[in-house]
Length: 198
Image (cartoon, rainbow, N blue to C red):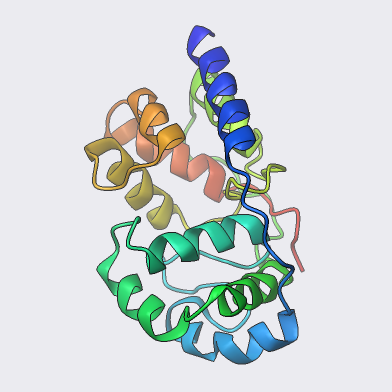
């Protein structure tokens, strides 16, 4: 419980400090620009490739933050550096792409049965930012509901081993435990129904 309270404090402070005001993007312009994203994410953001994230229905503010991190090489994904250099040319391009993908509907519309159980303490810890069903209501934190299990595993392992760093998630990685815990958490959130389903 103490860890959860500390995480809530970190989240609140982070939101207060993260005063990143951005102009609303144009989803119609974003759809045209998204042609460069379709090989990994598809035009509507419902990626069919398990290691690439689904973007459909994701928070616009989170997508903007993530694309800027790729553009500025804050987030260490070399493949995305190349994409960012070519297609995230300015804040308008980023805002338009974010608006397009945020306006799409997820294809995860069915709650899947759980193959494994996750400890309530771990889900409660994740719920501080992502909600217990993975449908985050905080704009700077991603929705996890219906996300690809393999992508979630890859992301959590990257936080755990330090390859991917972010203030809140680097702290949360201390609670992940072993690979079985990570797989169970990923299985749980991947099985949740998206609140933006078609």
